[in-house]
Length: 265
Image 1 (cartoon, helix red, strand yellow):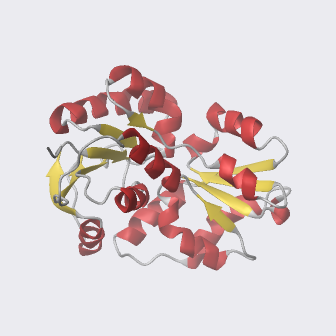
Image 2 (cartoon, rainbow, N blue to C red):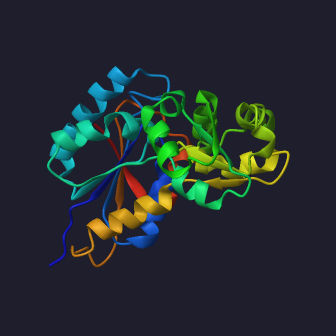
Image 3 (cartoon, rainbow, N blue to C red):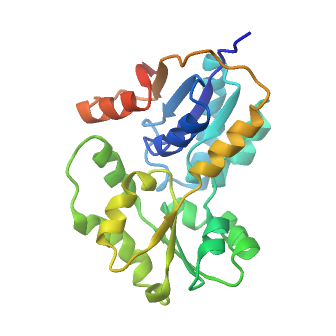
């Protein structure tokens, strides 16, 4: 028998679409509910207390409404702050998103790694722990950019965004002591892979950009390995937590991910 329970992906905005793209590759028939908490956007400028209170409560409501088999928190900020609270509150598998510091350290030749995330993510002790555990022999530079989150959202809506804005975000790492030796950048916000090509285009030298989406997709496939799926993919659902004026660009981007039904929580 097929199982119609969806995988639910959650983010503050559209950044989690970078994770959904990888999940679709491995599980093409999986029913998908994608939730953008545009009512709480952006997360990166909020306090830890605000995120710790908001995310578990919101995911509890979503779990009751959509009855998912698994939830992916496709947001570094929400994961590094609220993952433990969500797992304590909900009795179903929860896959989080953490900065890809381990694979970055494995690939870096200069032993200087950049972590580009939101302001909230880059200040978390979780990043300290990952750096100590997997990159103890590396210099790990960090920079938080709220502007880059907004750029990614605007870009997906089809709005023009200037090269100088991407250069400014990257300069937050490159201009630090040791930045001239940095050879790899961890995109520690799921929004940022959506504009990785723009970052690469303005970089003063070749840089490698890494993120955790493939690892999340592999973990999701492992946790659902013995489960049944529909024979054909059902229309995916995009859920927004506040009223949104969907631009043609955003609507097309959602449809390109199979998200053809739009709902409001």
